[in-house]
Image (cartoon, rainbow, N blue to C red; front, side, top):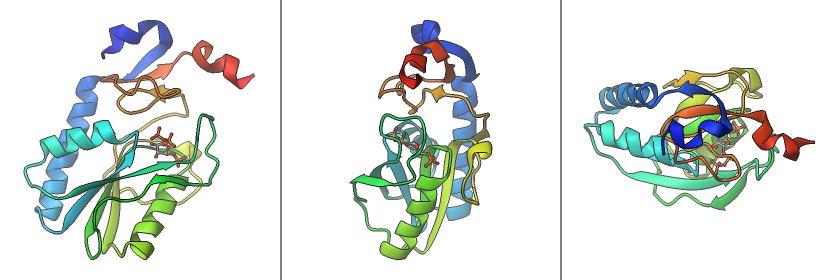
Length: 188
Ligand code: PRP
């Protein structure tokens, strides 16, 4: 789905398809160089990371296992509850492995903070790093090191490329700011 399909619902385009793909392609090159296809496992955080994971894997020139976890801290709300809900546990072995977490966005950092601890302590990963396509630094509640930074954005309601509003718009190929009128009824 492209931006013309959702023109009436969006305030502005934040990142074009080309900008997104360029960033992921550059990151894939760095991941190839840094890990060289050795000992690496990619972990995607469902559901938002699906688009980024697929693109990243496709651009890499080395191969490695992948896995997914389904986590949620927002439900249908707008603010992270801070309580991470495991909808579905990790489906790949990461013991002794170098893990790269693939995310669509880091907002408060609650999810990532929890997941890093879980992978290191419970799943015995050797190292854990992260590639988030987007980051909202102004919202951060935890001091988080981002080894592979994507784009830093303002605190706006963004949709597309994995990011949803009420489970829709994930299949948009760019990232856009949603019109407040689309969701403001819900916030009143
Ligand atoms: C989003 C996103 C991250 C998390 C980031 O997931 O995919 O996992 O929130 O927010 P945080 O830094 O404040 O923890 P969400 O809970 O909306 O689930 P979804 O990916 O299934 O949409």
